[in-house]
Image 1 (spheres, rainbow, N blue to C red):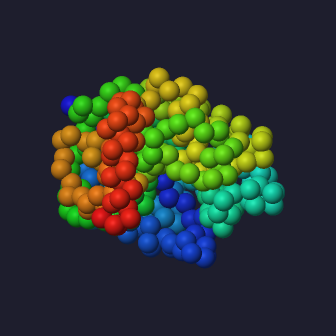
Image 2 (image 1 turned 120 degrees about the horizontal axis):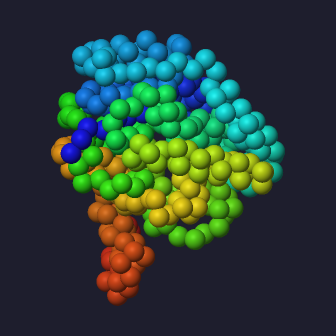
Length: 307
């Protein structure tokens, strides 16, 4: 059982002005502060104006010595080829209209899709720079848990996350059963399979994941499409499934349940959502069709009752 390291980023991409999706820098700083008391080493990629805020938050928890801040002057220049490819794709009106919900950020905002692509890139970069000394590294979104959406008690993050019980694969967290629906249909329908807030992997596999994400982003861009990291993760998994381990979770932020050495209070997910996940597992993963169908009908009934 060994301590892991964490990588995250924050860049101001103008979200405070997105109608219906408004979140300013102070909102994200508070999101980070909620879980930033975790005692692991955290590497934060951010822009100059946010660097001191990150240090201040970690200093309040006496964890500045376990914090590395990497300042990026212009995030658009980190991978200019991919940035330009995503930008060109999303400047096409047909690309935006193709999406089921064209007003959402992943449908119409090229900078949003680009920075989400950089999650694996920056984690691999931290390793390649020698900033990581642990065998296992977790990506955790800067705004993870939205100040208690799933794990409501900030003080409980005063722990050390370890690799206890983790296999030597890339751990991804799915909110729906992975299937073989064509990628163009996933882009159009905007269905979520993989929650991108947390990804965990051995240090030696993060460059593999970054390469798979880049390949996926380029493939989409060359077809005139772009999407966020959730779709890139599906494409990466399909390209090399043997290096992944899929964990099914009952909400977008439930991934921290994987850590066996800690216990976080968790807001209970609606019963019908739990039953849906159980039914999907029986039907698709364990091939127990009769029991799976029974649970599926139970899910439908509970959903109608909103229980």
